[in-house]
Image (cartoon, rainbow, N blue to C red; front, side, top):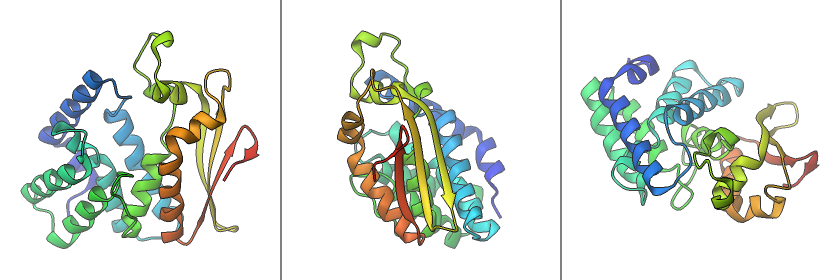
Length: 219
């Protein structure tokens, strides 16, 4: 079985992720480097394990998380679909079982809010892990007077935590934001589609999605 460690250590995969992030940097996007994909991979794995899913399913979610943004090397537009195709070739070359590769490809192709649906537990975990990765360290623009709304939203986040409350059947994104940098309304202007997708992903996993911002339950 192909392990997450094998995927992380594959030089071709590392090169593609790095180049994809360089392209997004040129276009003015926030960080999508190894830090982002590593965090998403770890969170997707954690979500499934905390829900009692089996170890191999968590492995596949981790692999999907690590590979999910690789399609940005082709183009930002429809990067989920191009990334799924790239992942198929890469995993096939590594010798992954087609049934397992299919699970990873399906999740990657369904992670972007423009076309995504939580069609599997792995896809749902990937969506939740990816769309809740909002943090100051993702901002690469050092000139605050030129921040766009994406920069302001991420820069405003002082603390971010995604927690499962299994006794209540809830998964909660808790944020502390600096409202002098970004208002709560601005957060939802940019993230409303993502948060709706997170709600559907949570439902797929038998949970309710909740957002708490500065101590107030927003959703």
